[in-house]
Each structure stands twice: as C-alpha cells, then as structure tokens.
Image (tube, rainbow, N blue to C red; front, top):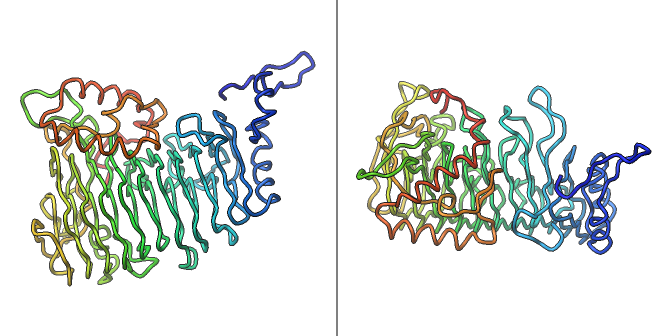
Length: 483
C-alpha cells in the first residue's frame, strides 16, 4: 500500500501510519484505508448512519481492500476521493472478498437500494481483481440504478471485473431513470476466452446519458444498451489492444424493455478495431500479435447476436447516427430483426479491414454474411431509414460465431488512444478521464491526416503491449476456443 508503513514496534503492535500521514490526516477529513480488517464495516457504517447528502471522502493514493460491497444507503450520498483528483491518485476500492466454486464477492460499490436516488460515485478507481481467474457469478464492479433516478458516475476508472461487467446500471422494476455516466475510463474488462467475456458499460435505465467515456479492451460489449428508452449515448471512444471484442456498441437485447429503444440515440462515438502491431513496411497492412478484432462495431437486433434464440422478436424505434469506425472488424454495423430504426451518417475513416470466417460455433443452418462495413437483413427489418451503403444479406444471423484469421498481414496500421499517448501504465490504466475528449479528437485527426503511420508509432504499440502484459494471462493459447 502506497505511503503506508508496516513495521512492528518493540511491543509487537503494528504501527498503522507514518508521522507524515498522521499530520496530513488531521486536516484531510478523509476516511483512511487502514486498518484493513475494519475498512468494509467502517465505510458501510458511515453511509448507513450519516443520512441524506453525506459525502464519504476517501484518501488519495490509498487502496481499500474491501470484503463485501460498499452500499449507498440514503438519497444524494456521494463516494469520492478527497480533492477530486482525476489521475492515478484517485483512491482504489479493490474487490478482495472470498470466492469459491464460481460464487463470491464481485461488486465494489452498490447504489441500487430503494432510497438511492441522487447518489454519486466520483473520482475513484474500482479494481475487480479478477487477475485471470475464471468468472465469478454476481454483479458488476459497480452496480447502480435500480428503482432510482438522477444518479451520477463520473471520473471513475473501473477495470478487471470478477463478473460480467465493469459498470452496470440496472433497470429495477423498469423505473430507473436519468442516470449520467460521463468522463470515466473503463477497462480492461474480462477475457476473450470463450464465455469469460465482460462488458465495459451495461445500461438498462431510461432517459440516461452515457457520454465522454474511454473504454479500452472490453470483451463482450463495449457499451451495451438494454433498450433504455430515451437514453443518449454519445462522444464515447471504444478501442481494443490485446483482446477480441464481440461488439463495440450493442442494441440487441429484447429484454427487459421488450425491445423498446424509443428515443434512444447512439451518435458521434468512435470505435477502433484492431491495428497491426508489427513494424510497417511498404505494405498497407500487417500482423496483429493477438489476432485482435472487433467482430461487430455496432450491433442492432437480437438475431445479430443470438441467432434464433428469441424467435421473431425485434428491437424498435432507435437511432444510430454519425458514428465513426476504424481498424479491423468483421462487420462495421450489422442490423437484423429491427423495425423503425434510423441508421444514417455512419462512416469508416482511416485504415480499415473486414476479416473473419465461419468458426466452429457456427451451425450448418447459420447464415453468416461475408465480412463488410455495413450489413442489413431486409427479410427481418421493416420501416428502416438506412444510409445507402448497406449491403443486403437475407436471413443473416449469428454474426458473432466468426473467427479472425490466425495471423497474417490483414490488420491495418493506425492509432488508438493507447499507442498515441505515453500515459499508459502497467496496471492497464489509460489516459485519464479528464483528458478523454481531447484524446478522442486527437485520435480522429491523427488517423485521417496520416495514410501510413510512422515507425515510431509502431514502437509505441509494442511498448504498450509490454506494459499491458498482465492482461494476456486471461487469454487461452488456442484461439479456436473463442467464439
């Protein structure tokens, strides 16, 4: 633990804080991480007993090893780091409770209580501490929403969840509304080994806002929108480095809102697939050491994701517009089993590849389209307003059963927020959320302005891969085990 002294005194007692920390503590008014054996109870007692509007201030540069979720208890409460830093001095809440036989502690912070309207999670870091283990059944790193409204999650770094998502906004009894998720840095989330995936952000709350988030290396969905009527998803950046991602932004789930995406708008997001990781030569494409792609940049409709599992159910009334995609995908945007969707103004930029072939999980009856930028099934979609460059593929389904090539010069050269910045750290951190908008804009300008990325950018890719080596442990060596 940073800045923490753990030496035994002559009478056998443990000295908990340095003199400097004690002096700082006098005027910091933050709740310390130590003693660790009481921290979970102390934090929960403060929230339970302090009432409406209480701010639980955590200490900068300290790690809170919790044994059970930290539970918001009253309206308008806040958990944050003292001084609201936006860098790696944000307090870390680390999931450290027991796990056995796939069951156990998975959630760091829970804001789904019946009296949790208006609660805020700000300027902290959430470490799910999965560390390459198999997934654990349970909630995400962060569980918010429920039957509440007007919650806020901002400037939070969430990564390495033990369960299925880095951040979940639950619908409750379909009464969740008005949650704002902004300026967060999310990921890595999950492993791309078969059925060990995890989402970046999972939102199932009407009239919410998901904006200005940076999401690196999710493996299931970067942003998954479960209907969430009226929700606005914009100015987010999703990219991959070491792991294949099934879907960048997913609008595929019929449940729990019965396919209702009315007034849900997904716009002006940037989705960056895999790029070549070797040094460029005269070719326009190279190899990716991890065979990393995004299978579907934006997925629309249950058949796109689940095949025939949900029969003739469709999603309806959503808008997908002005999103930008670059890098290696199997499909840029794929739409099936949808009605009254508007899909306009979306574009590829920079260098792109569309690669993949039927994998072992594709059944004989699956109609798997040839990879391409924009795919639409006209037999299962109705009343669509769709841009003119979509290719038609009748009866298409099960897009996620494709597999990328096992090596070869198929990946374009290009930049993402990790290899265009020197701020990546060894624990998977990325450019801090305070810089998200600038980084995203810089990436777009850089890729459009340069047809071939220089040798120095390639060196940065390789350097980042070494820095993120810990995440490779979650991968299986045989790629044919992936979906």
